[in-house]
Length: 271
Image (tube, rainbow, N blue to C red; front, side, top):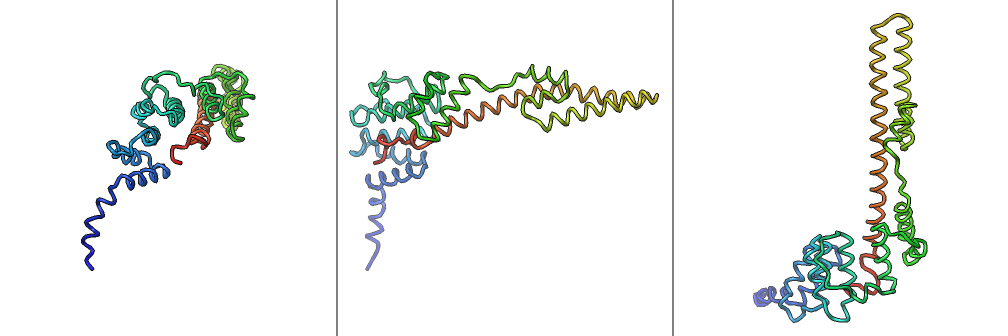
């Protein structure tokens, strides 16, 4: 039996609207967002194109970092069934990349919804914006891990655990290495104290023995280690603060990309 007729039909079958949709949905589930958005957009002139597909395309584009294009799609959703989804993902995308979305159409009624799914995004937005009122109460809408992260973020925002670079430098001016110990670099602090103290002692010992050349050499080294210890302590405080900021950003990212925020129950784009 000839298989040519079957082969001739294959391109049409593969490129049917339903197969394109199934493939795009598969790519979206597999987190291949850019390819998913390309496949969805092939259906723009299809009878299947509607708010459901517009929403999925927007989510794929948003996750592919094409926020402006995604934002316009979210704004075009108008049906009562999918408007909450579009409103949620518009705000979620704006939280992922502030300022990248086009201006909103206007505040949706869902923005003030008391449903937990909207409250989680709303409270996370407040935390990122450093609005920390009633954090323990707000934390209750999150799952256990996100609750812990949320409380750590809001606690940091309310009272940042930073180290003063000037204080670190001053501490090391008085006692070499103490500024680095203050910023948590204990090993570096003890090394600074040891090296500065050792060079100072060797300089003093050689001057005492009237070996002035060696005294000046070790004295120069002592001055070098002393100055380096002060500068290093200042820098260590900046490093400490940067590490704290990165830690808080990591917690925010963990929350943003967790399932209950990224693909919340009740607002799944693929059902």
